[in-house]
Image (cartoon, rainbow, N blue to C red; front, top):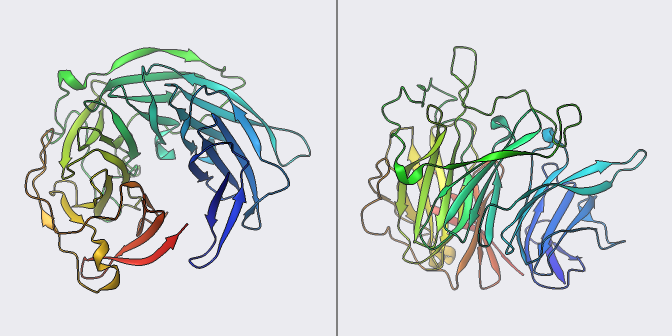
Length: 398
């Protein structure tokens, strides 16, 4: 089976992956030197990328361990070594590590962790920002979310809690620093901050005993000197926060924050706009600038971009309008109220439907370009204009 890697806006190169069934995901590593793909043939493949093109001399390194279709792969930050996670219909999340060989650019991939606490398909996985540690969030069709944390003593901790009724489709981590932290001091967001809600009974995670996959003298994942808990802000340190967004079959996007005092995950607020399953959510990277961006894609053929100024502002939603691709009509936005633990109210913002179900949304590394993958086989690239309107700047067809 063949997938396509885009080299430029006008040049694409087909890649013969030799998968025997549909390809569900393809991800480049941090440096763009490795390409990982996964398929309904129950395998994960890893290719070396040389001069911008994956090697075609072989079918890549094949990682076998799942017993069902593999939906997604995710690379960990290179500070933790060559680590790759995969999730599958079989209800498992597997974490792989490449063991390097002497005098060789490639090594052997081995499974170092099997996460099997979910009772249904695991549909999405996402590594936290590297500043927070080696932490992996997982979303499952059993309606639960889980967070795997690798600790410096070589063990894994797992928290699992209810996320969405019917099922969870996607997860995406927020940047490690709060909006505006680059230009202004940010107050602590812990138990002493009244703006952070107390944990509710429905969001209390069930702690699972740690399972040791290695030891402190020979860890499978390179330990980090950064603590896995929220950093206490001082005049010389940066405050990090653990937050992520999840998308579900209840047509909602929920935002979660870690509560250090109780060691639980707390629902901050709910974003409501879609009228059908939310297929994907993507929290945009930033460098501490004052505005946060979240993109959501739905079965209802809609894509929304949610923005929030500062830490206490309201979320504002803008619906992308595919009909504006050939026009210069700005896409208006609407301010909607979002409260801690509560749903966002208000009618949908102006916009239009895409030709088919929108399956994926993905931000550029700088967080200023949004890629939208539609069921019609096209990928559109969107940017925000100086006037605040979202405009399609390119369209790529498979």
